[in-house]
Length: 269
Image (cartoon, rainbow, N blue to C red; front, top):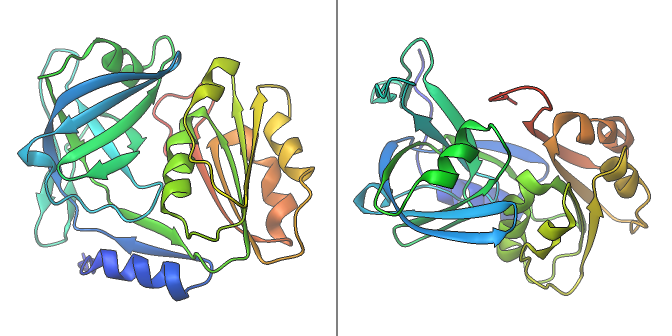
């Protein structure tokens, strides 16, 4: 297997943000980390934030707003089967069968702390774990594997997200250029989640929706967009963002990410 070039990822992502067009993939030095839960915070009635810290979180590579880690859970009998970094391939060797994992966006990384926001729902592996985990307990985090970086050279941006992609949208707002122009459309199942904090940015218009048939796609298609080079980031439930693919194909560059699919556990996008 050919080794992947994971050198200088921060500089490579920054260069694409500054000078690039479209998308580029930048792999990161990939690690498996043991982190300690430091704090719990209720962000909205349905979104819980866990802050992880400790020596294991130092030196994390994350340069794109939707970077994610995998939380690796033990088997039902408590057995740990964590992946192991392969220094030859610069990738992870995963045990087989694959251990139980779930992907989560890094909402914030500062110093040695990582914030991850969990949308709470009944019966979810990670959701149930987040409800009961207490400060002082440990978690295994694998990744991030790399960035799907898109340029910051567009005239306008459209972010179409549901509650699961709110952390990515919030981080993008904080990290995007000072003169950014954007529409952000957010669809949630509960209006109480409209209290999720988003930075107030000049030039950015935010539309909040409560879940309805065709709601997210229809709302995006009805936007009064400027005559400008536009980039679309659409993330959330796969079927909700799918109608935007054909609509955007001849209008703008785009990145689509299926964070989850109704009726499917542990979706792989």
